[in-house]
Length: 398
Image 1 (cartoon, rainbow, N blue to C red):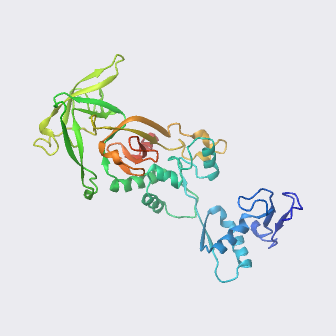
Image 2: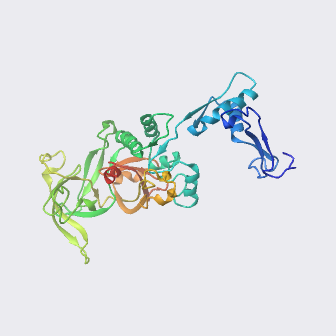
Image 3: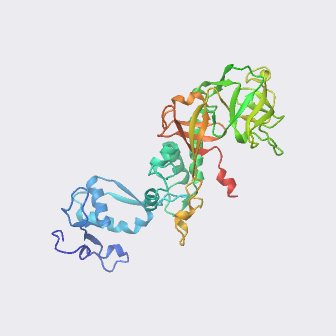
């Protein structure tokens, strides 16, 4: 067979074990087959190659593996794994095969074949795309080793096929980053606010806690000026009942700064709001004499004069179906989520982030947790959304 005398696929070498065994794998399993495909290391030297069942146990034995962890479909292969080792081992040492359930997740696929198709077809941008359920993808999105271990502890190890809710993984990273991620101000959909009674050209530094969950992280100084940015969604000209953010005649507190009141807006020829005009109450500065005055809304902000431009990549679940592989009559790609990636440019972040480096993690206050991407360089910051502050999918699917 190895001399090349037979055509590929015309001969195999079998191990005759027990033709009456109820386990098909223990009757006469194939050990070697003929392949004329060049090997990436040995070229065309070998014409015969071992089957997985034969090579598995032998490789584990020669490499000194103690426990070979497999998914449940390999449970019926274990007697053959043990039999081959018993025939060929030369001492008392033997590796052991153990099976457990596959870690299936909702709203994604875990098959390497299907993931490879997504990469080859350009649906995602590689194995480390932050939407991929790979370790390098999760790392790039901002998941920490501790959060993944916490998730595995939460779901446990079983011998029952199950599909695990990805929201539990998201819970694990929220729990972890809530304790460790410093808080910063980032405005991803900016709207300019001009505080008309604030001195022109003046700047104040507001001292703000880096992480209220961990006071050892200290404080930072955030510059405040006459012109700031807030989120567009935090302003409505004609708000509904119980809208507690900024609106004409309505007051809100700027986090760590002052209470402001909307006095008017500036629009373009199409009626779109370009600027919001406000006044501030100097006595309401955080820590000041009237800082305890109650208002119902608190907004994050960034000083326009000191803001840094940033690109923000909002990643979401790759599929919009809980079990995209579970449909017998449909391809999983039919359930791809068209909104799994939204790229925002012209976002504004506070100046302390100028020194942020790839894989640094932050909480953008009131928005979510973000990680600095590998594409980020000084002067061109790029942030990946790891997860929002709340599970919005749960609300959508009620």
